[in-house]
Structures are given as C-alpha cells and as structure tokens.
Length: 171
Image (cartoon, rainbow, N blue to C red; front, side):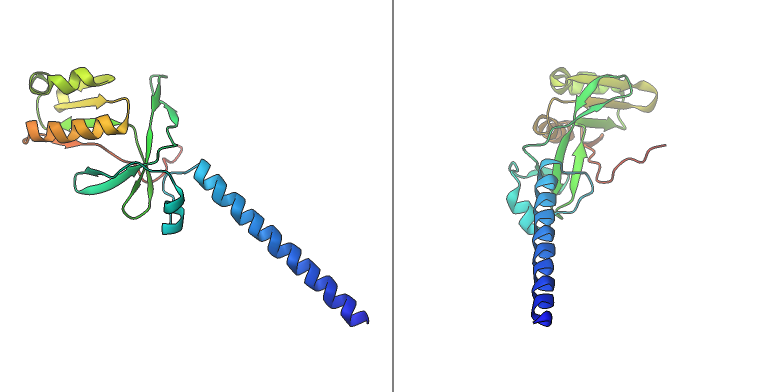
C-alpha cells in the first residue's frame, strides 16, 4: 500500500510538472507573438500563426512585414521614428528604419533626378562630402516602392533599404 501511495504521489507530481511546462511553453509562444525580437528565428508553425503582409522583394530577397509590429525608436536627435519588423525567407525577424540610402551619386543629381521621392519622404538627410542621401519614409511599403523606383531611375547609384537582423550591442 505504501508503494501505491508513493507511485500516486510521483505520478501526481509528474503530471503537475508536465502541465506547468506546457503552460510555460504556451505563454512563451504568446509572448513571442506579441513581442517579436530582431534576430529571432521562427519555425514554420510560428510563421503560420503570425499576421504578415504580402512578400516584398528587396534586391532579390523576399521579406514580409509583421502587421502587428511597429515599435518606436529614438534617433540620435531625440525624435521618435517608426521602425518596421520584417521576416525574411529563412524565418529570421529583422528591423527596418524605413530609410532608403542612395550613394555613389552627387546629392545635386538626387535632388534633380529623384525629386518625386525626395518630396514623398518624411525626412531627408544629405551628405555632400560622401555623395550620400538618406530618405526616411513613413512605412516600409513606401520605402520599398521608392527603393525600386530610384534604382531604376538612377542605375549608376547604389540604392539600398537596410534591414538589421541582429540586435545592436550597447557600448
């Protein structure tokens, strides 16, 4: 009888532990969906549970925007900028600041030949001494469309829409 009581106690404790482990894993999965972090690799079942927009082709790489995630980040000037979380083809979560970088072409040419996109940008930064222009857009879709159009209009320029896949390290 003592052995039966002991087996029941062990069985009960094991059931409680398994139940708590399942509850913990479920809450972690919900937390990951609510708080996706850059650099996280999602498997196919996790990807299936996320709401994502249609794929966007950025320089030969397909990414999907996470619909529910638009965190704010502080820029060096103190202004708050919207960033966009995306998932690449490998299931890795990345972050875009919705900035199109135009390089290897004088700023004056960008101002003339890409005036339409310069006017649509939320903010513009010119670096004459480096032949570089940064165009910040309100969302990722606008930035991706501008990147594609500018690349066609200025084939001699370097045009990119950077996506960061690893967290920044604190200094």
